[in-house]
Length: 88
Image 1 (tube, rainbow, N blue to C red):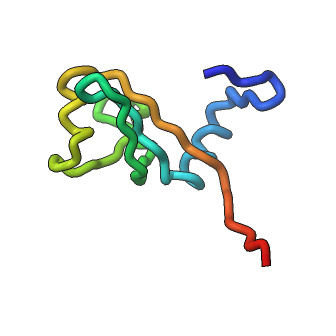
Image 2: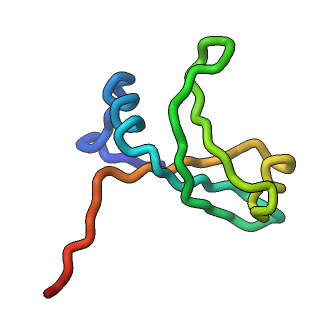
């Protein structure tokens, strides 16, 4: 993903803080040749090997789930704080 230098943040602690504060993400993968996306809570955790991983859950009934067996490449997108401002 192209990110202009102005918006790049490669500081690990800053990224960890952002993920903790904005854990509702969009999980994207390819299933049956099509892109699929689901909004889910995704949390930063540490696995048994001490490696940081993103952890989330979708239902087995979600058609997107079968795509993980076909291809282990996924994209998780997190947006920052946001809100709706009514025109009235």
